[in-house]
Amino acid sequence: MKILFKINTIDEDLFAKLLQKQMLRSRCQQLDIKDLQDIKMKSKEYFERFEYNELRDIIFRFYQKYIEEKENLE
Image (cartoon, rainbow, N blue to C red; front, side, top):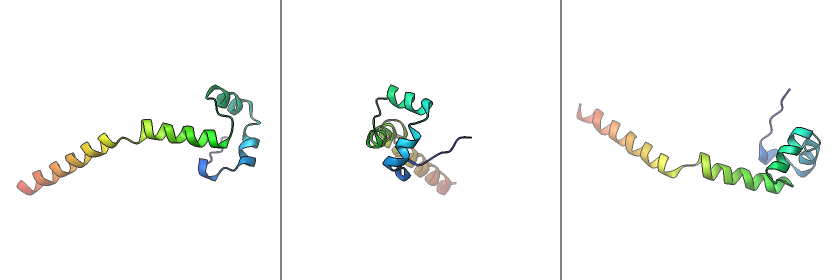
């Protein structure tokens, strides 16, 4: 059974407990994650690099405006 935690709800004690699991511990070692602060920083980096995409947001807004104007012309 997998239990998911949001990173901002984990404290140092819980993180230490979670690291007792071999799979998570080895994954953290591969990613050079030593403590809770590391995992928070790496998750922020991941979000900024792969999830948040300002260009995608701009293009989507242009598309929405285009559809809106197209509907107004019809």
